[in-house]
Amino acid sequence: MKAIIVGGGIGGLTAAAALHQRGWEIEVLERAPEFTEVGAGLAVQPNGLRALDTLGLGDLLRSKGPADPPAGIRRRNGHWLVRNDLDYLKRRFGQWATVHRADLIDLLRTAVPSAALRPGIEVHHVRPDGTVIHSGGASTADLVVGADGVHSITRRSLWPHARGPRYVGYTTWRLLTPPQPVEASTETWGAGERFGHMPMPDGRAYCYIMANAPQGSHGVLDDLRERFARWHDPIPALLHAAREDHVIQRDTYELPDLSTYVAGRVALLGDAAHAMTPNLGQGACQAIEDAVTLAAAVDGRDVRAGLEAYDRDRRPRTQMIVRLSRQVGAAAHWTSSALTAVRDAALPLLPRSVFERSLAPSYDWTL
Ligand SMILES: Cc1cc2nc3c(=O)[nH]c(=O)nc-3n(C[C@H](O)[C@H](O)[C@H](O)COP(=O)(O)OP(=O)(O)OC[C@H]3O[C@@H](n4cnc5c(N)ncnc54)[C@H](O)[C@@H]3O)c2cc1C
Image (tube, rainbow, N blue to C red; front, side, top):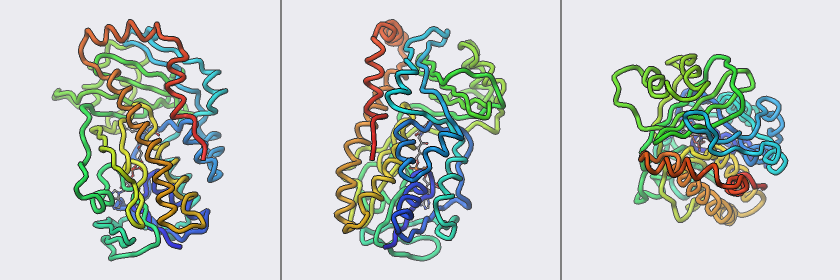
């Protein structure tokens, strides 16, 4: 049985590794000239690590990038809005890992035969019968996996009338600083602006920012430094330590829900199926869950029946996480000072268990 995987990002390479382990012949078509991820870190949550355990890769990641659970949410003056019970979170859900994106891609590549990787091939069209038209010609397979991200050509080929990506109203910046003293992973919420930072195992700090794109005429980093100059420590110091060429700026998109992720011999996964806001740090983890679930669903059974089982399993869970992420984003991105004042007064009064219960659905997952 042969599978063609469109896109060699985190989701596509996980699918390739999972299908290869189950005896499939695989071919990964990636339009970029090499298999890598541009800069910045990634939080792999307990559910993502458990999914990687099914490929025997979870412990390698845990040993590369062990991390504590998120310590909580602060106000821009540093006062805590929400403080998590780290021991409880670790006991209940297991370990977190913070890794460099490129390291995760390299790790996944070790689980895929190099002959199966075809960089520099752009896919132009996918048909439900398993035909893929690409810059190197045409190929067919028993299964095609569309793991080609938010602007997926697989999705547009099979669902030409579905609505495309929707800009959610804020932009993200991701950056890695040179080694900096940073305590636990923390988020800080302002009015329409949000700054997260987490320590990387090599001593660097990974920072992500979500806010409206500035209209300023300075460089990106100077704009960010100005914007966050009066936020609590170590935020200004982190931005001063960062380098302009290490900042990745991207607009944020969501994809509207589809009523199915499968058509004929083709399945969508990861951002191609359910691109979500980054508010829960679950996009890549959901792509990894999708990939290992898909490989298990088609193992030893008719492909179409396996794809239906995959769709039944994954659609409700991923669409629930898309909604949860959107809700968290809505509260974090209020720009009205009256609303943020009410939010900042109310959040510290809520019992910790409310937050831990709201995190549980995304972390509680096993294959
Ligand atoms: C600021 C920010 C922070 C985030 N933090 C986290 C986090 O901490 N934890 C987490 O789990 N998630 C996080 N995410 C989400 C995560 O980055 C994505 O959900 C994840 O990378 C999606 O993986 P994917 O493989 O589905 O798609 P992509 O990573 O987009 O990969 C798609 C691949 O397909 C290739 N491709 C596209 N079109 C074609 C074509 N026509 N032909 C051939 N190849 C093609 C692309 O080149 C690319 O390599 C974050 C996102 C943002 C914006």
